[in-house]
Amino acid sequence: MADEDLPALQEQAPREEGEQFDKENRLKPQFVDSVIAALDDGDEGRAYELVEPLHPADIADLFELLDRDQRRRLASAITDLMTGEVIAELNDYVRDDMMETLPPEAVAGIAEQLETDDAVQLIEDLDAEDQQAILAEMEPEDRAAIESALSYPEESAGRLMQRELVAVPEHMSVGDLIDYLRDNDGLTTEFWEVFIVDHRHRPVGTCQLSWILRTPRHVALTDVMKRDQTLIPVTMDQEEVALRFQKYALISAAVVDESGRLVGQITVDDVVHIIQEEAGEDVMLLSGAGEGDINEPIREAYGARVRWLIANLATASVASFIISRFEGVIAQLVTLAVLMPIVAGIGGNAGTQTLAVTVRALATNQLTSSNTWRAVRREVSIALLNGVSVALVIGITVSLIFGEWRNFVPVGLDWHLGLVIGLAMMANILIAGIAGVLVPLTIERFRADPAIASSIFVTMTTDSMGFLVFLGLAVATGLVG
Image (cartoon, rainbow, N blue to C red; front, side, top):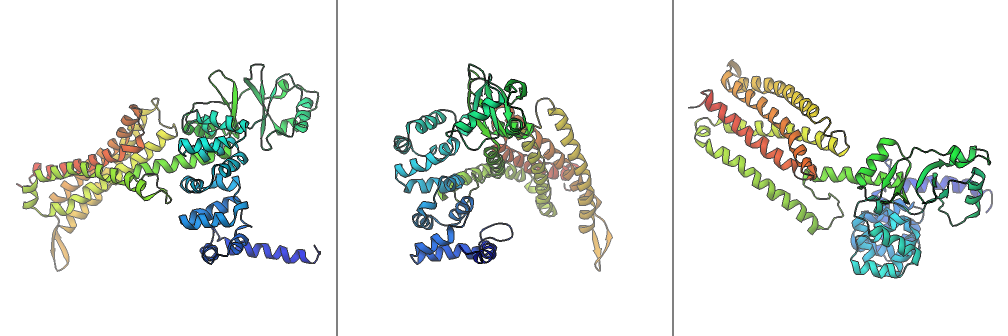
């Protein structure tokens, strides 16, 4: 290549990248449309030319922006770009859909390019028959590693861990370790620390690469290794694994079996995905939107959402029943019907706020049996302060609006109505605060996921109690007969 061509290429690269990405590093709609147009025209060469400069993660993003038919045509056009890195970055639903179109030998070839944890994710959701067909096409060593991982529970450290690691016996010196790393080409190429094991293959310490490079060759590993390490049981839930990484600022951690033997490692790049996945899952569960993935099949999304809506319908009937008991009271003063939704709505929002804080605290282990009652007192105090503040605002506002007006000027305030709605609002917000913290704690006590059902019970409580307190106060204080 001539030297004079280099400046032109250097100027061209940013321009091409600018055509592909917007300021938030997302693929531009114009670029996606150009790929689709090339596919629609049958111009696979043009589609390949557009996609080739992209990073594997960006190619995965492109697939997720296309519909099912377009994905398959693009995969056919860029076959040699469909590396394991691209497959590993794909959304679960998109990846499963694409795996269905590939023969077992092709999937096996992709899986063998991946680290164990990514290969397991690739095939764990497939039918048992498809799994066996793919495993039969793999090398015995790779097949054994994946079959071992699949034997562990879903969402456990055993599924998440990589078996590619560097472990050496404790009798080595730093020089021995350096020679071992240089002389063995078959070792994994990406690692941050070396695990030191005893004669039973139990981890006794770790050595970071930075320590190894800066330590004289004659020094024994036992003199330089870090003995205090975080060990992850192979059956530990992936959410707890993520919490360990977050709490102890880990980059990698050893995974051990029931006998304490080293069987794998988990690295921070895997944990980042878990944290994102678990956080999104809790949000979706609270809203009843299923997994909340736009690539989720319509039938699955429908099933997840309609169950939630029917459950809400059942709980809403409780509030309707309470209202029906006060039908005569509402008929005497229609203003009550106008104000009822405000009491229930504000109470529901207050309950949702407390519920979100509590569920997050439970998920991150900030709320445990050690500080339960302190957390309850805190949320009740906040609810009481909120209740008093909102009650004053709504009480004065209602007294003013529903008072006597003459020529658009208020000449009298309806303090009775303002007092009733103010007290009802304060009571319902307090009830919402109590329910928002106690409901998820109770569900957690029964070892269920508090994110799944808490909002149903909190909403039922704030709606029904809001109507009951408001209408009950209206009768008790003589606002209506």
